[in-house]
Image 1 (cartoon, rainbow, N blue to C red):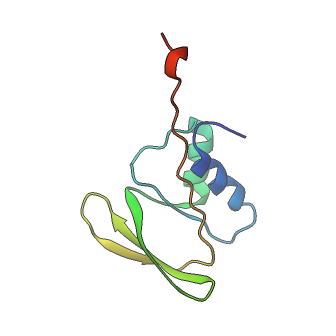
Image 2 (spheres, rainbow, N blue to C red):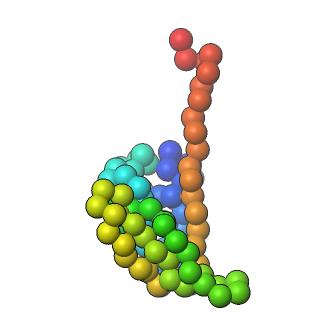
Image 3 (cartoon, rainbow, N blue to C red):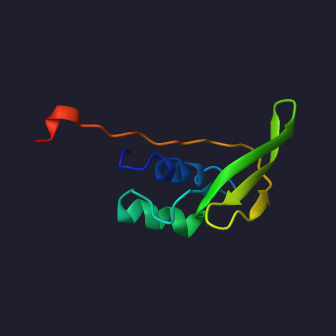
Length: 98
């Protein structure tokens, strides 16, 4: 399912198999369609506006993740088993849009 926000899609799919899903997003708003975004917010721990500032770990295991609040710089640590990074897509329609 492609609806304009790959992070939303990933979160909704991961909620089917994970005991808990945390979504850290650098903006307050999501670009996906309203229904999938609402579904994600209902079943995930959504943290906005945050970005990953540091990953901690040993060997091939990441734990925890350091998140920085985009507006205040406040640091939060989140215990994780896995990290999925979704940077999204840059849409450039070039000469198609007149």
